[in-house]
Image 1 (tube, helix red, strand yellow):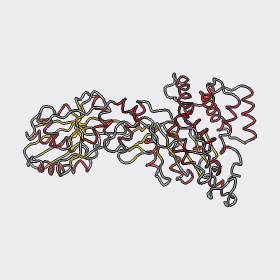
Image 2 (image 1 turned 180 degrees about the vertical axis):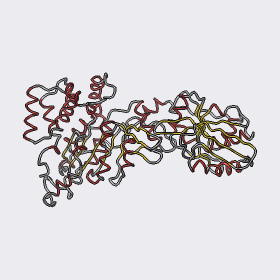
Image 3 (image 1 turned 45 degrees about the horizontal axis):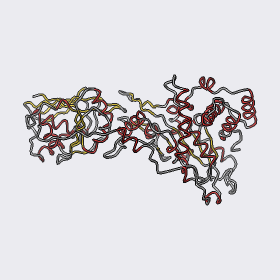
Image 4 (image 1 turned 30 degrees about the vertical axis):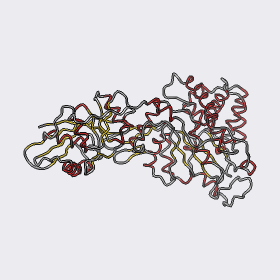
Length: 512
């Protein structure tokens, strides 16, 4: 007898429906075909133990399990439940006509209990797209799948519950979720607030500009000046996630297995801060079965690289293309997968190995040329993709003990939202451009026009400060954002002047 059940295989951030065909016939042995990995081949032992524990029999004849399409690699233990139900139906121990109406996924324990799986959200989206009535999953994954409406999400704790449901002995109410209500309730709940930061008004201003225009930032300053503290508060002033952005972000975290049990829609912008010992594959993604890396987990959020020169040069260089294209392509012999990677890069670094170059009080003990060699660890092409270079100075005792409350993240965020709304209107005819930082060079010329006085100021600044040619476009983009924050149509002299001061590392002789 031939039985068909349906599962799903996740590739990248999308899913493909897998038809699991089971035949029980004369002969001996258990065969799984259709490019299964070792975890699927080992499912025989888990399924047999679970069936015996629940009082069912594993057929002692020939069992063939075919996973179609056979040219897609299937990985992981999440096919245990559909294979087990297929075997029971093919051996006439399960009597139902409903198996074909559901996507069924779940890993079996030896006592028939179900363990949670990863990648549930793309699986549920594909199930609805292909017209399945519902999806059957472990209880821990139900909230995540319920994000997708018009799909019955059936949560089960054990294989026995799944059998009883299909045979009509147990009614299981589908899990429902008012996605918009949950999203709005949890939106923008950040524990870190700019109100906690005393002093550093110029750095807060720079981060506000960065958030308003989607610009990348590098902060240079001595240890203990507050670089990490400021960076961790940046997500709280970014515009609120839209529903589409929240779905995209949740899909990536679901595929990577980062959501945790009983998780639902992500409603806050991600903040990823990998250690400087990270490998290039862990940063951009990859592996035998390509998984998203840190830059994709930071999609629609912030990637913070603390102590930038300590990262391996190869790790930093692989970021250059994703920073430009806002996505990363992982290519293997048989498959090529795209992961989205639209993130804001926030980097911090000491000005020299000892940390006290340019310090107002402490003296740098680094030898001649050491500072320049340290700065040269960060390549020019990478700095070319960072719009704002900000020098962070230590907070004075008077500033630390000040009782006056600093401005809150919510107040700053309102200004950022208003500036972003201006940019939405400006770029409505350009679907690939969402903020000022994403403007290509030709668009910069059209959207960032300056008057004669502005050109004179920019020319003088570039000559006197020794600014490099790559600083020109960056200054114009940042000035455009400052003008948006000020609510003006034209880029004025004061906007240009402020933008020019954010190019510290482009000044000739900065470290000499």
